Image 1 (cartoon, rainbow, N blue to C red):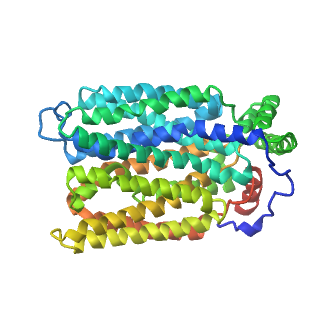
Image 2: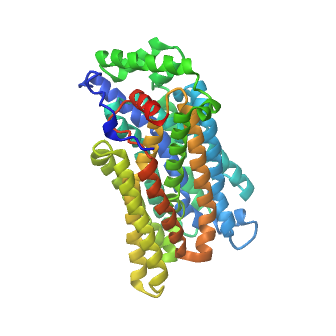
Image 3: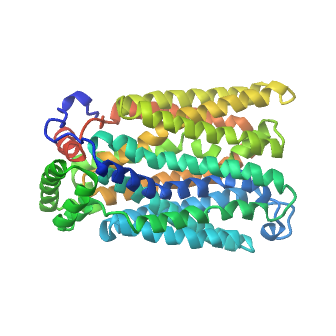
Length: 483
């Protein structure tokens, strides 16, 4: 059931305005530091898009075979995503138990050592083990950072602040593509080329750890733990005094209600009709986001461009356009889109655009002769356009809405399940995409087209509106409308 934007009165009259003050700069710093987790997320998932071409022929990894098989190529990607799925599932519960800030610090340490393990992996099995550990950190960050940002941000700017994490993800991917293009062309014949590409991920892990040491805990998590004085002190760092006091009143009331109803466990979520329906909506959002195939471009874009007709070295260079499209689209989304239009409307527009792009890519790849010089450029334009539409709409909106729709006390558990299934879907796409393209080439995009039609129907009939309201107000509305 859909909840319309008009069904709720804005809460702007209940809370004092944000105003101007040093607390706004403090809030901005919190957002920058926390989103280094997103930067790591982006670089570690995007670095394969370029590195994989060199890994395929690394004799230390192939075990003496000429090159890795399509299954093994998919496994290098999917094993990280399997770790992501588990990290997301466990991360939700750990963030509820330990706190958002403390878990982010732990994840930074795992990022560092797992990234170093990947760089120095002597064999294929050891590489897979380190990639799995790296995935645990990526998955944990994918759950914890958006929740942390959503709970620290004021409702007026929650969309843009939470979506900065997505901006950092695509920035990390763009950095990976650019660094891959430079290293891949300078060290073309070097057997350690992919290892140099992987080394860069160590740097933001260090920045995340030392930065988070100076950041506050989530005020909403502190209230849930009965640490009201600490929560108020945190709010005073990122709000005016009047606004901090007003928000504390709302958060206390909701925390008391949630504790009384004992809605913290997943079993209780499944036993409560309105929460169960929200969980299924969130899962649908996450799964359909991944089934757009965006990460097939983020992981294998360079290989797809080679199939389109570009040489290996040129594909590394033109693949950077995907990174440029991602970052520019995200900047446009943050500045002019997310907090100005309805969440649901943006999602519908995005899925219509990406589904159309899949149809065009499939037609161009299968109908234009491979001998045609125009084929590779037409496909490049379609792919870059697809990436731009995706990252300006569906990419940031799904992560934002998943952080918004779930009730406070159960948010960690529900997001954990949602992002677990999101990563499982991502893992399946990562594993089977190279095998599908090997079998049916650009016909793979027709599969994505069919899934896109289903996604459009799901958004239209099932997804509620969330913009313009506090997290506390949304919870009250969903109780009334979805029970």
